[in-house]
Image (cartoon, rainbow, N blue to C red; front, side):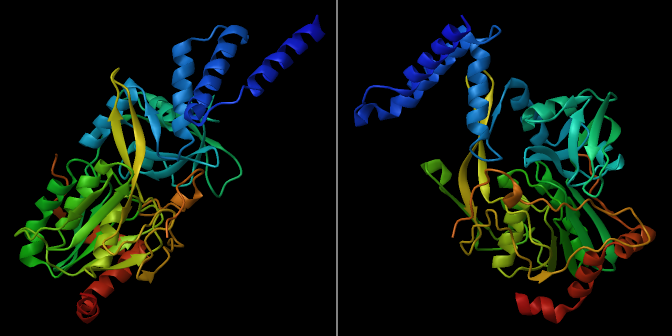
Length: 423
């Protein structure tokens, strides 16, 4: 009997492997035929009952997951989550995550969020969520498990990059307001402007801090370090706020809708001050568009470390049942025609971040993960106004003391001849 079952399985496999010859016109349907055969086999012979809808959903998830690290299937809940997240506020712990070598990994904690305060850092591997292993988990499933109602706890088992022993961290979920623009006056007339992400409110937040800068400003340090990106239209409008003319970014894809080009307009509210831009390995996607545009137009001096290298555009496509897919549909290019996919923006001046020896706390969590490290990455191609300007001298001095890149940026900004030579 055991031999008979084995022979039956071999015959089934042989039937799948040997198919009659097909014409060229039918070749495109052969994989679908095989898919249907395998689905029938699972339904009829798998050890437990399997729902056909679940099988198809799993196949769709796998199909998209194997394209690149950024394409994904979004069930109804995930689709709604994405719409909420880009609107400027959501409930969770405040981390950007990705999969790196099959492991769920923190790209960057968002500043001033529960995750940031709990000590999660870029490069941390999340081994478990509430005691459940994250092995082979999808990004969207991980997001679902980590997010939840305000005030509820989530327990993460994490492994820091420099550690051999995992540790359990309990984080209390909260509303994550994505106030994406923060600013300080470093010295009289010299301003620090940090953009933490690009959501629907970023440009309007930015404009609110411009008035004082225009009136009294001598120069701006624009900090895009560990900015994971966000909305393309916001990257364009933020770039436009610093440029009066010229192309900002353009995209190329298969379909007509993916062929786009965006140029700056001369606006009276543009900020015409010298700029030094800070970037690092966590500067990704939309923030790379801004850095690339300002660099190509010689509008700013770019310093820091090479950026993440995500030069692709994802389109969110809604489906009839309320779900959707996030699909990579184009590559984007800087004004001079550079694709930074898996390459990143190279600073004009490479300055590694050096953590203070006498203080374990860092002002930001700087990641060493880049697009090129992700499996299946695209290959390189040849309102609440919390953005007001603070005047806390002690806070500014602490920032400068702990951040060698920021100190240098301020020194360069004050060297007006250097900035003028770039423009």
